[in-house]
Length: 308
Ligand SMILES: CC(C)(COP(=O)(O)OP(=O)(O)OC[C@H]1O[C@@H](n2cnc3c(N)ncnc32)[C@H](O)[C@@H]1OP(=O)(O)O)[C@@H](O)C(=O)NCCC(=O)NCCS
Image (tube, rainbow, N blue to C red; front, side, top):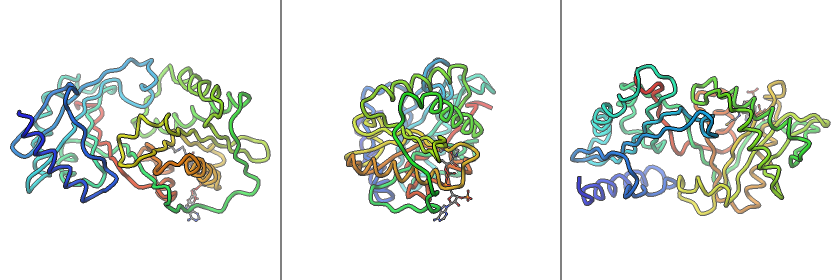
């Protein structure tokens, strides 16, 4: 496949996406990216495979083996073109053992690029995770603030509470099939908390009610959030890493108080947008974030296990 063919399809794909969503950045170059190029007259894709160790920090959030397809669609029927690319990809995915839970086939698409959604469903994919975006000036709603709730920066004495609340979040999210319980979870989370607490101004915030810690929010400001900057067409990008409210305190406004505080911190840091990942199937996080002024930017379509 020649580079001119790829460039022409990419340009048409980018134009189509820009019309749908001005916050989606132009597609990145595949030069030197590795993987296998797949293509037809009006569509191209890059198929990649990655594998990580179960003790790696990322293993908490992803299957160990991931096959990913990055697609670019042109022509008058982009949905049909996506179907053809998915079929061309299938033999590559089939190297995974049938039924192996720690594998997934993943297609990450701009949420508003809905062409070909049916083709994904037909082949066993489901929308699992979203990167949601909130422009800085967006208003959010929520219940009135709980009287007595106080948000403060975490300190070393909060270490056990922070670890407990973040592990509780992992356990809650594991229900939705994309977070995998791992033996290394407590060690990984403790290391993350320690790294954060060692900062001069830790971006770890505790919500407490009359001295009892009930919730936690973990934030990344630029440059710590720069790893996610390429996902959105904006200059300064903040990332909301985690938010959890203790089970007994949910639905009482503590989450809203933490989110409002986080947005204030992002505003002060000059973030133009804030991004976060959340599980679409979560009956808690999905409605919560959309009430707080977020909306879907990228949708991760999963088939897990990769081969059934
Ligand atoms: C998601 C989560 C952080 C939200 O925190 P929370 O403290 O439960 O949320 P709040 O009480 O501030 O807000 C939710 C409530 O506000 C209500 N609400 C939303 N918009 C409102 C508005 N405009 N006016 C009045 N009430 C409103 C909702 O109806 C909801 O109440 P309900 O559950 O009785 O329907 C929390 O539920 C949680 O920790 N869930 C598990 C972990 C998780 O999913 N974390 C996010 C990971 S990405």
